[in-house]
Every structure is written in structure tokens, then in C-alpha cells.
Length: 336
Image (cartoon, one colour):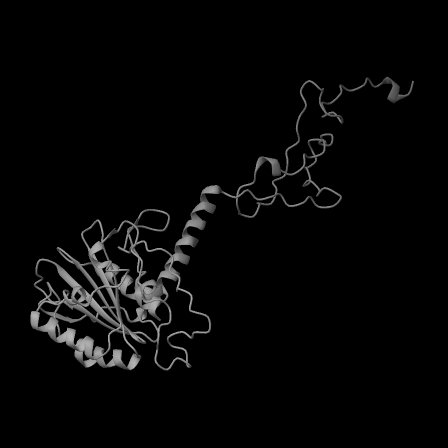
């Protein structure tokens, strides 16, 4: 026997098996940490990456596990990003708020659209007092007739029926039937009743006759808050006659020459927005000076071609500025 044959075999050393443990207790190899994902919105479960291929057999314990190689083949498509509904809704609300405030900050139509908001858009908004007027449409002109401010119309004549140029009453108004007149034409004495002094009424009546007054059309109404509105349209032969009556006789800048009933002292209303001016229509606006009488009275004279207009609003406790400005401006538009 050789020495090798005589030497008894050494006891087997304990070594880790070259194969993975028995199926009953598989050992999952540790996974090397993946690089941190970029920060961003959370991903939905449906958008998770494809499942990893089965793990390779566990290497001997003496070997270090290398980092998992990147999967072969084309890169997985980017997972759809799930929008956070709460964040999206908040962004839309504030975007709308910025847009509304930008519009409000711009020049406002007719100077009467200022908004007094109590909160951001989408919540309650306090009314600024405007009335709900119907959509306005100028009446059609007779065939071949020019408008009052057309170059060919040197007299400034309104060829449309004067009664159709009256501003309609807003929603919720109660008509003042005393201003209907006969067939829509008001008697001169009923118009003169707006003026306080008897001597003023007689003087103005004579002026109207001397200047060739043709017609008076009128409309009036009352609102639920107690505001009373009266509008008078006086038509003459030419625009030159109306200009001569307006200034300096009826409507000097600082104060009216003839006080109205209930307004012993009035002065020029310099708070009336200049943006509310209507092209080709002259306007002089007055507000009753404090202390008011039984009612506060606001009134305005308008001159548009051959037509002179008087707009009056009064209310116990104070006539609000916004409805008055709105009414004067819309009536100016119909005449312009």
C-alpha cells in the first residue's frame, strides 16, 4: 500500500453548498440599492415598472453580490404621472382669480362695472347695485335717413321715433303711469312740474316755446328699494337750438340754474366717471348738496343732436350713485 492509501480520509470540512438551499426555505439574495428616483408627483399603482425576472441562483457566501445589471432590451416607457386632484383644482381656482382681477383692473365698460367683492372668485360676490336692464337696440331708421351724427345730417336730426329712444325700465320696476301722456307724448306742463319754483316753470316754458319745442317723450318707474326714475326727451328742430338751451341757460357747470323739486341746492357731480362719456353726447351731471331734503335728488342733462334729455333719480335716505350712472350712460347710448 502506498502512504496515501494508508492515510485515513480526513473528516469533511463544512463548506457552503454550491447550489441554492432546499426549495422549502429559499434564500432571496440581497438587492443592491437602486439610485434614488427623481422627486415628482407620486405614481399610480397601474404605472409601476414591469416585474423583475427570476433571481439567479445564490452565489457562494464568500462572493460579493454585484449590482443588478440593467435589463436588456428597449427602455420601459415612462410611467404616466397621476395628477393630484386637490393641487390641480387649487391651481385652476387661483388662475381664474388672477384672470378676473386683471379684467377688473382694466378700463371698465361705461364706468359702472366696478365690483365690490367679499371673497375670491367662486365664492359670494356682493352686488354693486347695478340694475338689470334689457338688451338695448337702437330703433331702425327710415329708409335713406342718416343717423343724428352723420356728416350729411347737419341739423343733427333723430329720424327715429323719439318714443322709441327712451330707455326701457329695468327688471323689477313699477311703471309711473303719469308719464305716459297721450299716445306717448307728454304735455309741456307735466314736464315743467319737475322744477321747484313757479317763476322758473313759467320762464322755462316760454323758452321752450320760443325755441320751437316739437315733442316731449317721457318714461318713469319705481324700484323696490324706493328709487324713483324719470326720463324726459325734448326734441327741437336743430342741434344748434339744443346747444343754446343747455349752456349757459339750463346747465351751467357749477350748479343748475333752475333747481328741481326736492333739491333746493345742487352742485356739479365730479365723481361721475369720465369713462362713461358717450361720443357726440354732451353731459352735465348734478348731485344734491347736503343736507338732503326728504329725498336725495340726482339729475343730468344730455344734449344729443336735436334732442335734449333730463334724467332724474331720487330716493329717501340717499339715491345710490351706481344705478344713476348706469341709467344716464345707457340713455346716452340710445341717443348717440
